[in-house]
Each structure stands twice: as C-alpha cells, then as structure tokens.
Length: 267
Image (tube, rainbow, N blue to C red; front, top):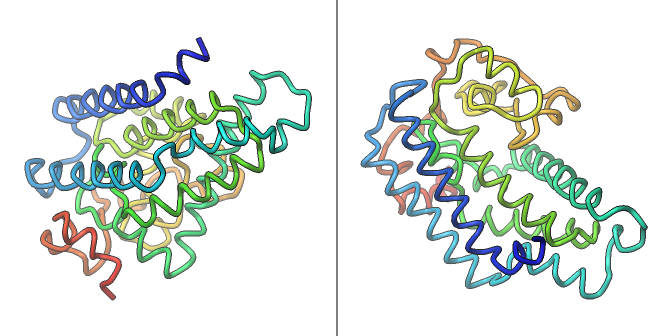
C-alpha cells in the first residue's frame, strides 16, 4: 500500500485537493457562515488562478518538491530517523506532527519580520474568508515555505510516506479551516480540541492587530494552546468581525491576480 501511495503521489494529492475543494465550495453555498462582500465569480477565478500559477511555478523550479527531498534523504540514509531504530509507523506520525509544528513556527515568524510580512499580507488582504483563501499565497512565500520544509525533512530524515501524508493533510486542512461553512457550536467545540476549525482560524484574519496575531495553527490546534497564541472567539463575534487589512480595500489591488502578485511592493 505504501509503495502504491508513493508511486501515485501526484495523482493522489490532486484528487484529494479537488475533492476537498469542490466539497467545501458546495457546502459554503448551502450552509454559509457569513455573507460575502465580493461575488464568488470575481474572487474565485483570481484566487484559484494564483493557486495554479504557484503550482506551475513550483513544478518548474522544484519538480519533485518535498517528496523529492524525502526520497533523497532516504537514498543517502540522512537525518535523525535514519540514526534511530524507531518503528516506521511512529516515524510517519512524528513527521506529520513535527512538520505541522514547523509550519506553525514559520507562520509566527512571518508575522514578525516586516520583509516576510510583505509577502504574507497577500493571504491576509483577501476581502472575504472562504475555501479559496486557504490556498491564496504569494509565490515567493510558497517557495520560502518549501525551502524551510526541505531543511526540516533533511534534519528529520523524514520518511516519504510521512511527507506525502503531511502535504495532503496540510492542503486539506488549510482549505477546511478557511472555509465559510457554518458548523454547529457543539461540533466546533469538539473539533477544535484537536484541529483548527473555520471559526477558530477566522479570528486570525481579523483587521484588529492583536487578533491577527492569534491562532496561527493550520492543522493541529495544540500549538496555539501550548505557545499561548490561542483566542477562542473574535471580540466582535463572527458576524461583526472585519476580514482583511486596513487600507487594502480596493478589489483591483487585492482581488485581481495582478494585484496580488504586486501587492508586496505596496507600502
């Protein structure tokens, strides 16, 4: 089974991505959490256009991506897990958990360093909050994130299966916790004990500065609790929270594909 997953990694990841994307899109239409400010017909093509542009760019620059790095460290028996005698299943689980911690730490640092924030604000400048926001990142931030993952995959000697599972989970969870779906309060409360829910992460997209520096997690919610960056609810409630960034309200600059690509150059 593991060999089959590795051999069909690209197709499997694509199937999971589109299945989750289409499923959440449909759920958002049927059970929306908040009304949208910008029509989907205007935002979705541009946000998804940026996703496909990034995917094409990464295929050109890093054809094998993170999985290729995992195959390389496996070939040369490099990294922590190659110097230990732990069960393979444990190494796979630890890879998923520790790489999620790395993404949490990376997210915190990006918010703290002005030059990196210029790139990340493309993600935060979206005027609405829905499933397409979860994949809306500037290509330079995507490349930076991939290089950081390369380094930690090498340090861990992460197994290929663990890296594949992490990438699929990260993509799916990023779309889920950015989705504009209405979850019952009880279900949200149970889920956020383990994973980041839409209501939990929406706080992070508030225009209020202190709220935008809370709830950094993408998959596991435990990191925000451990490092005390957790905020249960927005101050103005989910109906009153304002999404986006101050002074970034022109759709031509924050919704269009060209505007997103050049947004980091704006003061």
